[in-house]
Length: 411
Image 1 (spheres, one colour):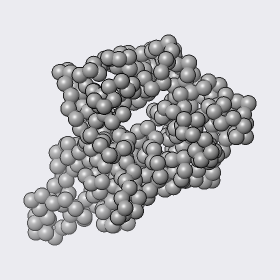
Image 2: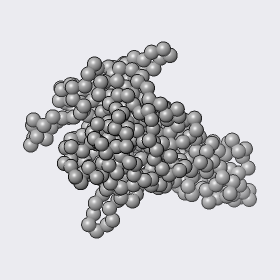
Image 3: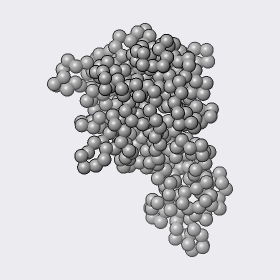
Image 4: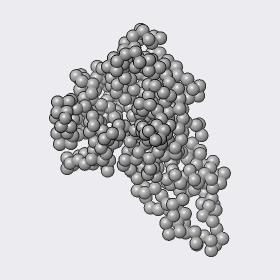
């Protein structure tokens, strides 16, 4: 428990005034800090607890059965997450696979930016060739590979749960053995939540043609698999998307749906409640000459698209109206000032810089590493930038994250 001049606890840094109880004063009156808080109305007690760091809440579950029941309740977990999201910018984590001859292989989640309680690297069991789904959902991140079981993990609590390979993953694993890497598809796993039932769902969507006759159903344009944590099994979803997708791009989760970009530059959504696909709009560009030059992301709680057209990169935000949708240009980045190619690769095509988050009241834009480029913060007003992380020998993925108490359990 944090201590400061006799304080029993204090709030997470940056989330408001500290809450302190002087232990000496309490002892004079025959009170304990626990009895003071427990004497408060439940609503006040929950409000105070929801403002504390996750690491404190995990310890406070041992104080009493009442506190344990409160902290483990769904209502409290939701309140704590809302408080975390309202307290400031997200934390930026860097997910990487660590290989060391002296230690077991492991997945490491390294805090890069932020003020959360997760101030140290968190380690999870190894997943060979680790990849990570875009972003986080309720503080949970989803790790996957084509060769080993997948994992959902909470970096703040250390909780994790594995789930089995899908049929698509098994086929990809076999194809990696029998075919060259250039001929093997590279679809990406999506992870999100049905906001009506609270059910978390990993989803595979891939173009069927690339698998030839290996798939059970080769007559459809795409193939979709959805995982059910209740049955611990994957199931095919029919019908899948009628449009081919950019399947080496990570689907993005936002507000109860997963989103992909199609080869014909349409934005495709998958409602995780109704489990139906729908084209919601055309991209702000008419065609996609090179898939590596476009990217989808979430910035400032909005679905965004980014397109690189050297020497600039444009980022648009999707505006959802009652009867239609439209795109608003957020900014244009001069890549010659923000990014540079390694001298030994002067002619190598630089992919789109990966927007990760808008920080400091939307004045600064964080870009993730791509093609040996560092993670950088770009000041939208001064047009300057500075490096945050140089991933030399440390290949991984940046993830926006808010601390939470969530796991896959129904509580």
